Picture 1 (tube, chains in turn orange, yellow):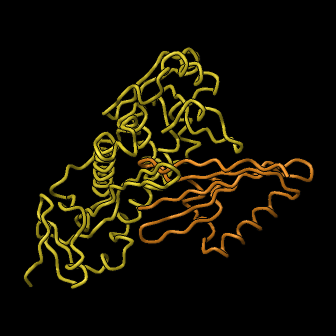
Picture 2 (cartoon, rainbow over the protein chains, first blue to last red):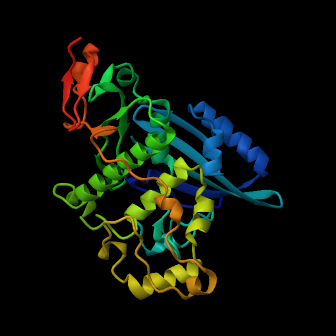
Picture 3 (cartoon, rainbow over the protein chains, first blue to last red):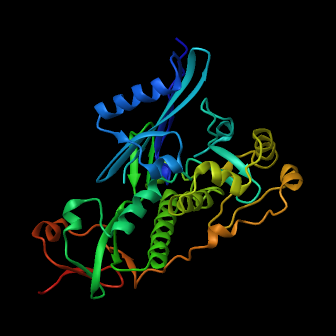
Length: 94
Length: 257
């Protein structure tokens, strides 16, 4: 399978810790969004708020608690029966 | 900190680092609005996200107030070493929207300057190497993130407002002026450092820093907000649920009822 290495950026000031990985999957954008949102819910993240989706359109799900917040951003680029999927995680420890 | 390779778009098209005609170099990782949004949500609701702190009876210079928990963080070696400037801030309650935004910017800038300053001092240089303290894109990128969060402006729109140039032009400007990287040049101000940019000359009629980024004036500490002097309010006061008085210079004491 065509899977990229994990691209990591450590937290730096206003920048949250970030990690991204891309891969190809046989699916379509809507199914992928549904699938990963379900995965988000299983680990305690909720669907992105309207405000989050407006600020970063690819925000799929997020969670905020005292001292920490996390978000998962999903980007899909589909053609034919397959999609290039990128998942990006932002983790803020404040 | 961002490096030359960050100019190249990621697989999802996200460009972490780019030159912009009106805002200079922007590290779009620093401009992510998630941190300022955490600050905004506390200021909007007049409540910290820590339940124990939210229940405290707090006064600033005798007026009702609340606690904000905010700061910035640095990690290196894949998170093995971290330092954070997270601390408690005390803000007056009942402020107008305009005053709240001024307070938020005051706190945000105070935290940004503290973070950048600490990055250049021992022992934090063990983590940062001291290289990225006040590098030319840091403060302006932070400011873009703040306005993104407080004005509900997406990062895609911010790239247009700042006049992001092409990937090729960003590489060209880097190669011509930044042989030793962004950290070789310092900027301790909120005014961008600009470089000669033929693409900007050809496409932008206005190369000035957008007025948007001066539309909120930062409130000075002392009256509407203060930094708690010893970083955090003493846990014993919090646990005892004591009413707290905070002075204009950040001294915390238990209030007599």
